[in-house]
Length: 266
Image (cartoon, rainbow, N blue to C red; front, side, top):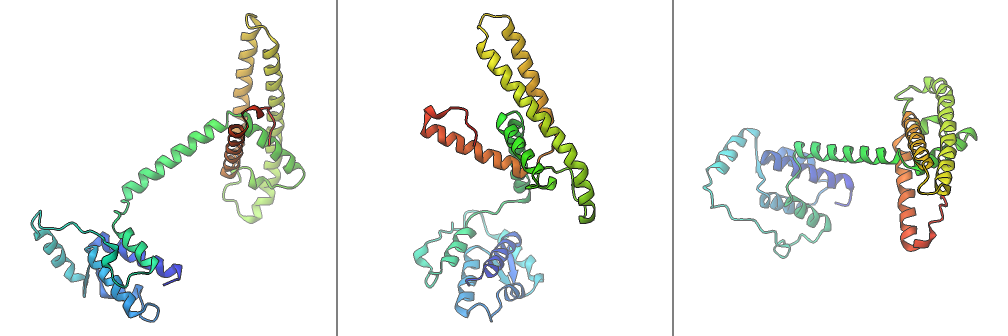
């Protein structure tokens, strides 16, 4: 059982069996053909199904009898199953050990899967929103503009605005979006320079000077405009992922060399 497809079939049988509480012999035979699985291996799997309380029946009509028998078992008479590795003679195959242990872990319900997927999406959205307000993403976009102008990148690799366009429409759409994207990137680059100039002027302005409040307001406005331009690009997820990786490397470098914060970009 070294083939990944065979492992997938066994996992699918376990999932189906735990969901229904039973499997039919036809289902087992279809998933575990005798010309692929040795008889000893099939026997071991049948034992494993029994330990997982998955009944093997001849016909689906017997399912009601299985469920009735399970419901008729008085509370407290069920003994807690303990999966002792030493008690499984002949099951020294790592795949079998993995499957046996996996069977002891409750499967996610559809509701659990939806909740987890929703949390992941919400977390990714928060990360994107934070990155849209960081100079690091702006610098990444400026570098992308250079590569676009030099033909190293296609617009479809930068923005999601092309959607699910067919191959025939891509060239026409790319020509349109290329001008729009490059214009936005030029504006972002100009805003980056303006923000750097405002930061320099703020550092040179005395703390008690009324001019600091004016400069700070201009800096916030500049950042807001830059964020709006970055959001308008509708960047692909890969660009955010790449920016996060660069940020992680920068943090790791800073942790190794605290005095290396000289503002250099990767």
